[in-house]
Image (cartoon, rainbow, N blue to C red):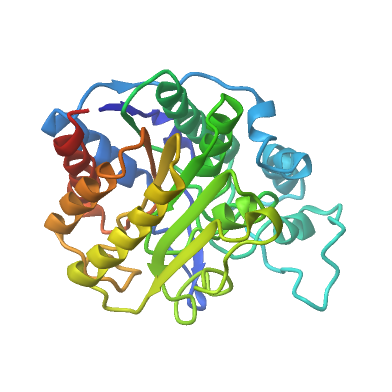
Length: 346
């Protein structure tokens, strides 16, 4: 299995995030991707390749032009005000505030184009997130060219980013961008399977009214877990997309057996859809030792996850998302890929 990766992600390294009432060191760090890349090499999963470059027009197939413009200029606007630390939002447009008009001032823009305090912006953020999208797009190109599988080792992650909003460490939605690219290249049906501990609210929102991209997610119950306001089992899609959004929320403490049963249901649903390509939002924060999550998966569970996904039988692009037990992230992520490769031979 070929891995796509770029060291450009080091340009994005937030000093802190708003977490439970205080500014704490970011859980999402460059070390995460570095450890996974080393593990890929250690086990001989396959070659690691640098990404190709893609234009902004490909990103604009998923993200609103004004949001892309904001990401490109946010840091310069922030520093022009005399600020020296990371750019972070301090106000958000709640239900009783106007949400259809972006402010001119950077403080207002940061709140308008985000939904939480977990997406700091610094000097290298735009370059890093654009290259992360290039990583996913290069992987999608491989799938389009006939590869059985590929691993897009993206950082920053992407599945929380909506068409017009960043949050949850995510700025551009790498999985959604890859899925749309595959559609545009001729795949009639594309499925996204999100196995991150946290619901991929951005991916769901982007494809919620479409029947050509099936979104299936297994995640912690949003009644008690981030992102809280999306990911319930009664969210089935709307309009043409009705029936093409499937959520499997699980309670805190879900372990290997319960997770495997739910994964089998999810994979059966994807198999029935008959996708020409599958994009997996691969988060391994379902691990028992993850510092901000409450599932109980172990190393062998990730191997079995890869094997079950392989049984769907679709060309598959894995796109890296979350996982914050840094010491174990390489083993857990590569176990999924190895399990898949064991079943398919590539």
